[in-house]
Image (cartoon, rainbow over all chains, first blue to last red; front, side):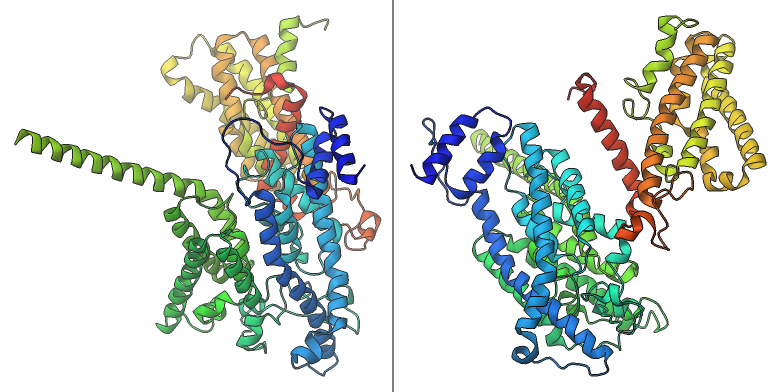
Length: 413
Length: 215
């Protein structure tokens, strides 16, 4: 008997038992179920939930790999800088090296493993308790989580945050598809508010910087937004191309705008993610950036203002530093928590970009406002949809009334 | 229950569980979020409310036949305000530091919807003894939840209980902190208190499905 048949047999034996959903989840991961529907009309489509999830994960792989190289690169270049011999970037010479990759993989893979292990364990427990099938919703979340945290996030913190995010952010609302907030961002928000020292500052973005603090080997790496928020904008040495291609410190997956852009195009091309949200979010960020630049140009604030650094930052550069690009492409486009109507998506996306830059500039305690902006708009998405739908109903009622009146007129004539 | 009849005992016991003012009636949430970051503050708040509600219910109950119904809310406010001022002055006299921690929230006991709710719903229609029991019972139900929330928030948020470092010293890295444990700052923020209330509601209703409301 083949392995496949054996699994089908075990499934029959487990039917109705408590553990069945857990087994089925592993089973359908390996093979298509042997049941077919016998009655009724059904839509046969290849883009089921698992396919959708896998497409997003595919779009995330380049970002993850780049994150590994970059984690190693930032680590070694911070050491060089501390020794007084700052590195100049040489892509083949000192970026795409096995040392960098190995160092990055050793620090980032545990994050991936913990994120998936804990998250899926929670999903399995809930599936068994509720007697549901295990939902695939965590597959993407599990990949997003390691990409939006600093490299050295302690694993137990990540585990606590994942449990919180999956249970409070998703399962209490009824599981995948029912959640109000994006679970990955819920996890990040939890980490940010629970353990702020591990989520901001100049020590967490570079591997080992925390444990070396206070020793002769101390290293550090501040993010560009961090520099700007402290009014030290002139001190960093990263060029525009460094920012765009991602050779800068930051959360694991957020640095390379270039690869995120490729991933975004892939998602738009495969029709998984909404281009309306992405485009309007970019427009929103640019608008807010332009407003701030305008304020600076008009001379309404002086250089002594604590907002000057971020306000005078060129408006389009907001898109290539920090997590804005990553958030727009992979988080704002979450089909569950975003707006569902096409018109609503424009508003939803626009305000994400707009508010992100607003929080960046005006709240120095949160040099990164993207996750807050997206969570906020997640909450408002149903309201936006409601008004778009109501607006459409009103418009059509009016049209129906007008045309009815017209026909009436014709008849009376 | 020797001294109390079954009906009277229910006045005290019901609000502790199946008719809890916070988790079932969802009243008094604001103070449950505001002052529960420390266990000590929670306990003091619980005791203060116990005093105000027990005494207030008795006073209102005694006056229930002479209060003109048109101005009953004002009379109730005067009674609560008087009692709250007594509590406030006592705290200022004997526990000044604590009264500073609780700051305006002692004064805001006046606005605690549970108190006015019990005056309206119970004390105005029942005798002093039963009103006293009802007041004590509801305040105890409220206080119990407050103390549970305070316990978890202080333990996980600051690593202390009543100010005692039960998990070790976070600065000198002793106890749990030696293993890399860190306090959860989110626990000290009000949103987390709301989530803890939600978790208590969840646990209570899954243990007793009869409490789940129909949609």
